[in-house]
Length: 285
Image 1: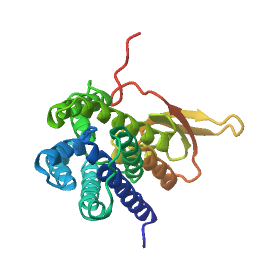
Image 2: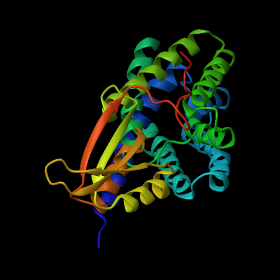
Image 3: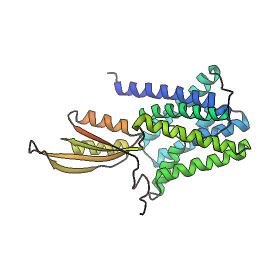
Image 4: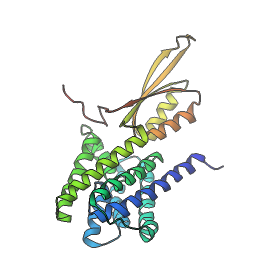
């Protein structure tokens, strides 16, 4: 029997990889900028060696995927490896040979490259995968140092890559335009998946709280809070499963709920900030 969800995920991944590759090849690469992540390192490597960006990106990701295999979820590693491989192949063997390069202003390259890369990454996130690079490093750092939030780890890594790009491309504008592109990518991803929000608090009223909770732990590597409740009209006892997820996890959570209890009542609260273990540190007043 054909798994419709698997087909949908693959279509999201392929569409995302194509758009991501167009943004990288046609706009980001000719601008001589490195907007963070494994592709940022690959773009600097391409500038120095002229080797293909896709294969360099894959080379950067391989040791990170190996670490993720032993220290993170193996399902996460397999999904990420698949996304990295598909993106690298499409970039080098499909987009690069046929897609023209934009030769205009660097600011326009940064903006439109950021938009296209952001759209592509959002579709890849919706497939339940990531593009590797900074995401993997962030999760590995959070695993070893739980008090360090993933958001702060990603900011540190991307900041280091942007700073290095100044010396590789030999001009300060490389970092400034790279920062613009990185900001645009982030905003586009957030807008496509959550509007303008970085996360969602999900309250699930269900007859199968433990089953949903177990799948959240197993498939998302997160936890949830199970709260007993009683319906005001029916007077019947029920249960609320409360959890908070990131942009790359939301579509998987929706699938878990639909497959476990199609009659569940779900309330999604958009959140602009999430504090606590695995997210941002709690800020002292």
